[in-house]
Image (cartoon, rainbow, N blue to C red):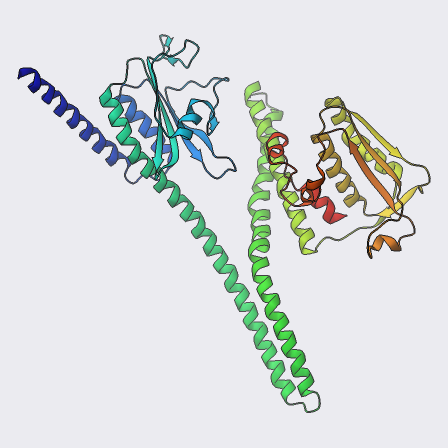
Length: 460
């Protein structure tokens, strides 16, 4: 009877401990609005409650093509090169925990595994636990905890119940963030739509005035009324198209150009000043970081410029500046631009200008160079060994339909050949569409904006 009373007392104490700590955490989680803040607070409090000496909080980044678990917060975490900070679902124990949506508990930790560090030394944990944080059976995060002691059954019960509350809080924060973004976009679009409606109203008023004047005329009244009616229908259709076009392009181009390029140019200038380190007060690591920032900024600026070029092409705002250019100048341009790259990648690079061509051609040299640069960059990107070749020759007239090339006396062809991965026949059409590559995995391996071919076709 005494034993039973002791067991009952211990059980009551555990239940009280569970309720008390769950209530404490629930109160702490209320009103949180920032993912990193809530993740850090959870790890800090958990370390004290369940005697954890190491912790990592991975949150699912769902805005990517393939969701990843990214490290958002840590406790007593020491960054090491061989320890990744993000995982795909099913990758490593963190990814496997997210994939199976089940708790993983390790007791026999290998010597080469993560170490718990202090000022006096380091040691491997006795227990390691990975907990999936779910909301409506969807993985929101994975929490990893390590201890030099061991996690009791009470600790495990507490952690299982706590992850439900954490899942609700994470979902609420993410939902609120998305709602704020959508609200901002909605307000912007509403303002643009109102402007378009005012313009349309003014246009309709002008048409009504003209219609009233035409009614006073006798012989031409019916004919002019029909013309006005057709013009009105055309204006309404164009106004609808303008509303859609303005919503997706005008706002995008104006905001993107002003909001991104201006601060980005300042960032590039400052990053360049940092990595050049004229005063010599930065160490090698700091200058390397500054150079990385500058490189990433260049990539982003290139993406912005590509999107703006593509939008101009689609809108028909591209103008040409025709001048006479020597074929030898074209050859010098591509050699100067890509010879260092071919040497770096150990590739052969040749330019062959066939006989029978005139010395020069009348064209827009800037646009021609842009097309050649896009196509050659694409060839070098997807070629790891072998060669890249540019051939310039007189093309035979075999153009389908009523192509404008049939009216030309001579046609010059620019052909780029490489020994890279190639493109299957059924994918050769889609690669000229914006944001398309022949195979989805190549965009992750080779990178790029996936706009070069589309821009080249539009310019051509």
